[in-house]
Structures are given as structure tokens and as C-alpha cells.
Image (cartoon, rainbow, N blue to C red; front, side):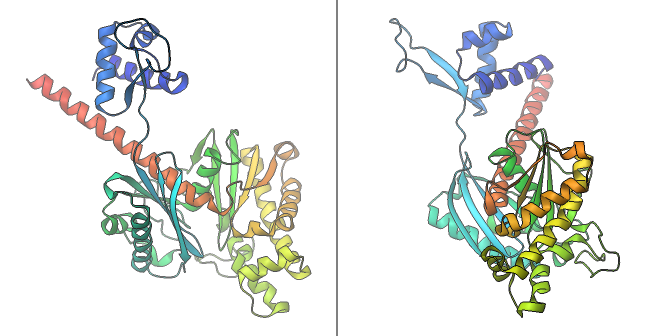
Length: 401
């Protein structure tokens, strides 16, 4: 493929995406090429299932003769699977190519279990939803998974120091791919929550947004101009491992006094147990919602501490929006108001004067929806790479013949 052909190809796809279906003649005029050149380009795109022709005779009155046709982007086909390895559960879902969930399942999960055991459980749940949905496995394009830990941008695998300590060194994507017979891609759960909120949720119209995930751990997703920022090696957003007390409790990451070790839902439940006896994180959150004074104080203090460091982030990134998600958000304003107040107190005033702090509009589904979007994103990238490889091979054959 020559550079001019590549530019024409890209231009056609962009024109159809922004302006909708058009005739070949309209496209030829738009790009200043002959009809034969445009016809060849459309034929090539059609063979790759990127565009399709639709008959206009049923929609508009036309003179006798050959029915008119317009070129349109091909309707998305296939299905995606998403798996959210939450910090206290596994959720799995299957969606169509427009990311509408067809089937979903959830079960309890302990992040301390070995990777092989967790992958067996995930594969079992995926098989259940494939069977119950009646979808042909051959139509599933990819699987996206979210994990509560940093994912190496180059290898797609877990970084050392992850809270999933027993998973480090395991080929997570390869192991699950082998179990399911499908391509599998992995990212950090907060990044995926940010992806979902920027695509379908609260951050759709924003240039810069921060997604703060408060659960058994603390995560951060950063969205800049519609794209998740992961940093050079995938470590960007590790808010939970900022050291707030160098003499504090040892964190799962091996450091001491991390924010996550102080404000995770488990840590808060443990702090409340002094006055309430042994109490689960779910019960602690229910008490906070019901107005229990002790539970509200615990949650309020956590919100203020998180807000302090979100305020610092606002001075760095100057976002329009801070979105708060995860189980701790069930506490509502008991968490959100102290977080908002502290954020403004510990930042440059101009950095937060127009910042809105809101709950995740997708709620506790954000990370799961993000896994589906990520699967689609990576599947498209794989398709483009395959197309480029095939085109290069054809060009080489033409040069040799």
C-alpha cells in the first residue's frame, strides 16, 4: 500500500465516521480522486469488513434505473467478554459489539488466592455465561480483564510489588487464554473504571478527569483528552501507595503507611471494631449509610485523608472532574463532602475552583464495563495490525512477481 493509498483509506473511514453514509461519487469529489480510484479503495475496505454498501431505494424516491447505494461503516459484529477481578468479588460479563451486556455473573473472591485458582474460577464463570447466553464462542473477539494492581505497559503482565503478590510471575493473560481458547488482555482496574466513565459515564465531555477507586484498595485512573494515561511503564495512578505515615502499618506492597493501608474498606472496618466489635466492611458501610456516628466518623476521616492527596493531584493535573467510585462510595456524602473540602484545602485555589467532585455514574459496574471496552479496543488494534501485515505481504508479493 502506497502512502497516498493509506491516506485515502484513513480519510474515507474518518469521513464516514463523522458525516455518515455517502455515495462513492460524493467521496470521490470530497477527496479529489477519480471514481475508479475511489471504487478500488472502497472495494479494499469492503473486503476487510470495514465498510459496507447500503441500498437507498427504500428510503428516497429515485428515477428509474440502477438503485442508488451509499457507503457506510460496517456495523460492528461479534461479542466481548469482560472479567473484573474486584478486591472482594469476581464479575464476568459478555456484551455485543456495542458493549450492551447480554449476560453477567458475580461471585465472592479473595485476592490472596493463588493465580491458578483465581483463573480457574474466572474461566468457570465465563463458561457459564457463554452457555446461558447461547452465543457461539467463535463470535467472541476478545476477553478483557481488570486487576487491582499495576500492569506493565510493555508486557501486559503484573508489576512486581502488586497487592496480588501471589500472582506476580504468573502468565495471567496466557493462562486464561489457554483455559478459554480466546485472546485475553489485562489492565489495572482503576484505569478501566476511568475508561468506562470517560466513554459512557460522568467524564464523557471532559478534557482532564481523575477517577478515584476506593475499595479494599485505593486506585486512580487519569483521563486526558479521552485517553487513559498509564505512564511510561503502566505505574501512573498508584495513589494507594503514596506513603502518608512512614511509621504506619505495613502495606501489601511491602512499604509502610501507604494510603491504602489506612483507608481501604477493610482497614476502616478494623478501626471501627474497637467500638463495634468484629464487623465486616459491608456492615461498616451499612452503618455509615444508616447514620451510625462511629461509622460516619471513620468514613469522614478517610474521605478527608484521600481528599488531601487528590488536592495535590489537582495541582498537578488541573482536572475538570474528580469521579469517586468503588464500594466506599456507598457511604455517599459522608465520604464525598469531607473529600471535597480537603481537596480544596490542600491544592492551589485556581486548580480546584472549577473542579466538580461526583460519584461514578456507572456505580460499581464501571470497572466491569471498562473490561469490555478494553477488550474491544485491543481487538480492533489486533485487527489493524493483521490488516497491515497482510497488506505488506501482498505488496511484497507484487514487487516480487
